[in-house]
Length: 160
Image 1 (cartoon, rainbow, N blue to C red):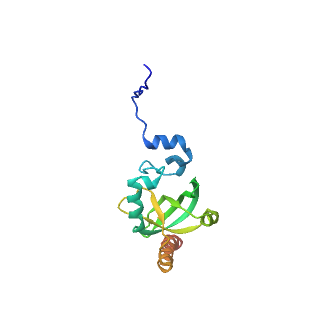
Image 2: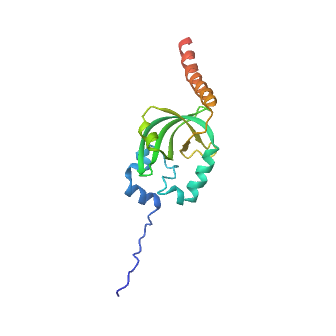
Image 3: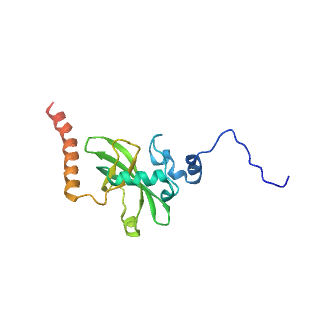
């Protein structure tokens, strides 16, 4: 009579549902990703999936990401960065990076910046990570490769 009764619901709320209610700016629709995106973890340090993903991304393939937008998640400062990513294979996708940034890094963010990122080609779940350890020569080589691929179709179109 005086105890607390657990209410039964026919539809169970998932963590994604809770997150979309708490932070609609971090929803799949707001971030511009599809249904394959697993979502932003409330605390990636407490999520074994997020820790595993971060470890895999540290050794992932290098790509270039153009910064579209970002959202601060909490006061660490932790930010979710949205990139339009282009790979050396010519694949383009919206990439989401969940990063801990310094205040200086956060203040230097500007839409349109091109930054090296790492992704997991075998998974392709929209997650990327800043490639802070990338060799500048390798990044320049990748940039040249992507730029030459973009120029090639245009030169064929003018010759036709």
